[in-house]
Image (cartoon, rainbow, N blue to C red; front, side):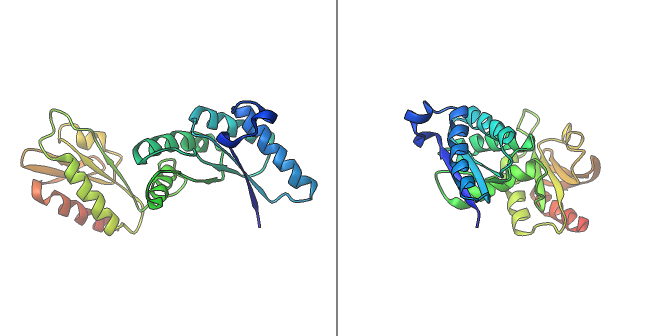
Length: 226
């Protein structure tokens, strides 16, 4: 069985390593590695966690240059769902984008299920794991004449309950002026109008549908793509 050596900035031995820093985290972890190596045990995973995102990133970058052991990434004590998701995404995502890291843990104050969802979305956003779907949607602006937030949430719920059989990108855009063009890389999408909207695929208009039918018509196109 592998052993994970976990170093936490909050509990580091300050008499031995000084104040928490990227360097002291790495030194502490590698000293523990040496203990196991002397005993002939090298099935090791190394973790260097702190809530300070820049320190966390630098620590893992240093460790990746100084050892070949698998690295377990995480921003510890990241906070409540909103703040914690951002901190974890920045820290874990930055390292994964550099090719650093082998396993991850998102630490949120709340339901552990949300930790898994955030972790999967980080991997999906970097192309390291493919979800059944990727949903994109634009911010609201003066041209938006529909309840974009509500419609996007309905689409997400439908995609969760009726996931596509193969990975696709679905767009929910606020207006027909820019929506289809901005989301031209999406496999299929909808863009709002006044009382109606358009269905499009790869940036090409398919048809106009009433606003209250937008979600149902979009899901029909998703099924066709399967």
